[in-house]
Amino acid sequence: MASALVFYISGHGFGHASRSIELIRALRRRVPDLRVIVRTSAPPWFLHAVAHQPIEVVSVDVDTGLAQIDSLNIDESETARRAARFYENFGERVAAEASWLRGGLALN
Image 1 (cartoon, rainbow, N blue to C red):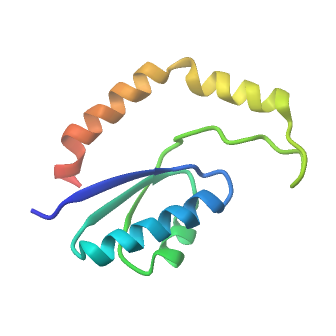
Image 2: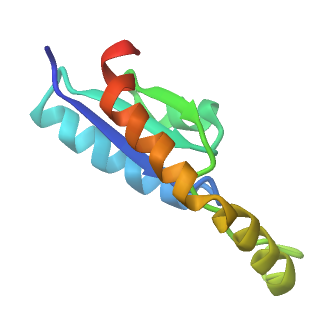
């Protein structure tokens, strides 16, 4: 069975995704049959376009990012509200993710 690696990538902007994809590409050069699963809220079309190799993309919120008024200004209050909502059930999120990692990799 080929090795699998799960990447958790912020969906806030394309910078996190593009840098992570470069790392994935470098790893694939060393391990060509590496199974790569990306869990993110970044758009799948972007990840597939820059990966140049097969990757599995699973849409999951892995962070809240920043709420922005425009490209230069952060809405701090909305950012704090989003973070509070995200972390309300963080323990449940972690348990579900751990369960997926234990069982989901073999099934997908």
